[in-house]
Amino acid sequence: MRRVLIAGCGYVGQAAADLFLSAGWEVEGWTRTATSIGKNYPVVAVDLEDREQVKAQPGDFDAVIHCAGTRGGDVDLYRRTYLDGARNLIDRFVRSTILFTSSTSVYAQRSGEVVTEESPAEPERATSQILRETEKLVLHHGGIVARLAGIYGPGRSALLKKILSGEASIDPENDRFINQVQRDDVAAALCLLLDRQSTSGEIFNVADDRPVLVSDCYRWLAERLQKPLPEARSTSSRRRGDSNKRVSNAKLRGLGWEPSYPSFVEGMERSVFPSDLPSAS
Image 1 (cartoon, helix red, strand yellow):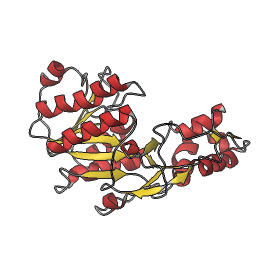
Image 2: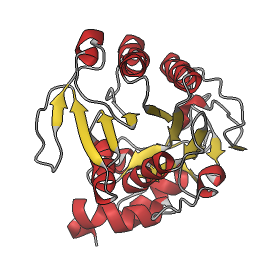
Image 3: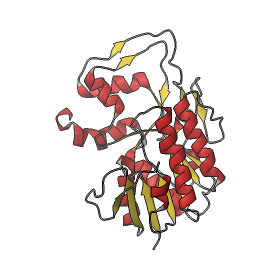
């Protein structure tokens, strides 16, 4: 039986764990503090930043997924969580395939162009630069990098949260494409990438089929929720680090991955509104 360690067994990691279990893998999860989350697999409290603690963990795994998150945070937290965490995992599990969940934020393109895994990844934000450095470390050791678009799903949607709180606004002069992916489609992608033998040392974009303009997202949400359109608010220029690109998922699709939620609208209607906003139907 193949064994997988999910280091950072949170929102995405738990969904991935369920899929690995159903596919016959033996699963172990690590979180920073929790020792049990009521699942059919062990969950151990391990701080990825603590080299000695990681080194002391027993057992070996065929694959290790580094999908810890920071919930925001500054550059130092990113470095400790992602880069130091990856280094500690690589040093401890020298025979395992390491899969790092990075972000499409490493693409800094600003003109609405289509980006593939071959496109330049030269981020402006210091936090995204840490992700890029971590990618290079994992790839150097024969690992896999999954660049995730903005994740949403049950209990989680940044755009929905903003429109409900009144924080949303539409800038008619600096509209931009954003790229998103539903949580369960991310989990399916991680399982697929580790099930294949030919993905080591490769980068894969994990995004749905239809990049969408921010304004279109908010217009659809406003209509769906029967709320006024967000305020139109012009800014002199786009914020530093804000990108405007359309992320291609063609390489991942070439492996046989097909998103169950190919667009934001389908994902929201079928996975978010039914559970989060039953009165909005």
